[in-house]
Length: 121
Image (cartoon, rainbow, N blue to C red):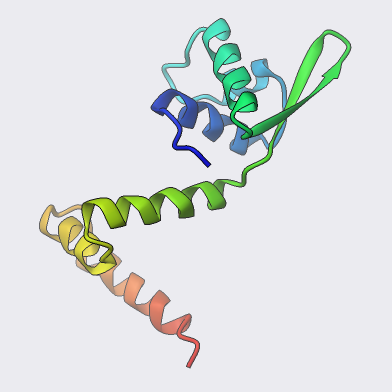
């Protein structure tokens, strides 16, 4: 699975949000500012070539469905991100966000509670 560009990720977000659809559907679901229709259509075609989407022609229109789940994509690239930028330490990642005041003490407590509740002991 190759890393997507920002433009491709934005398009995939719209696809994942819709589940399946035509380019017009994805344009409506796209975060503002939405790209021009032709740009999104080209991006969607590229995503199909890369194996992220499959298409089915119905009349004159192609309907697209994702082949890669959003969670699968996030897991693959978050692991690489943490490995590359935080020496494979999620503790370093959380510490970074705490120092930058991007995560509150209440959010940290909530994360700890989630970890404790999912502990397989």
